[in-house]
Image (tube, rainbow, N blue to C red; front, side, top):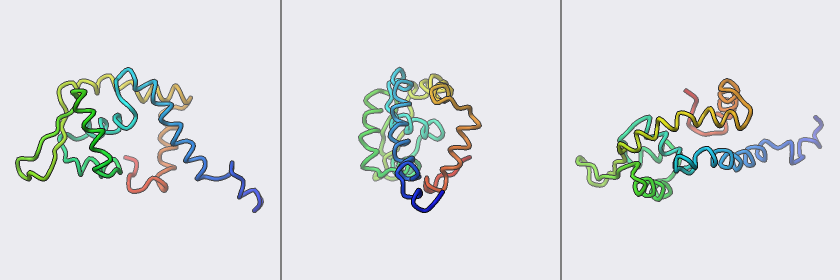
Length: 145
């Protein structure tokens, strides 16, 4: 590729990442709708299925979000009966987020989500993992397991 081609929009990594990020939500939407979740809510639930309860601050850090951005998502999930928000007994300033029985039960239905996403994009688990791992330098602190 010559130097002039390097400046073409279609050759820009940043453009590919931005458009892919926008399209991911659209790919997940029809898969998550039957679960009653939006894509950001799904990410919150994934983090809580890994560890619950946890503080709002810890959850926000795990999701690379600011606590004020995460708070409305958490409130909506609480209104849906999937999570609880409680002040910590140890430190009243800390808000702990935990799963309800319904939130734990939803995990069973969510087990089908990765497979359905792979079907929608025509990739297998190995290809998805390679793509995820290839994005690691651009994704910040999170690294693949």
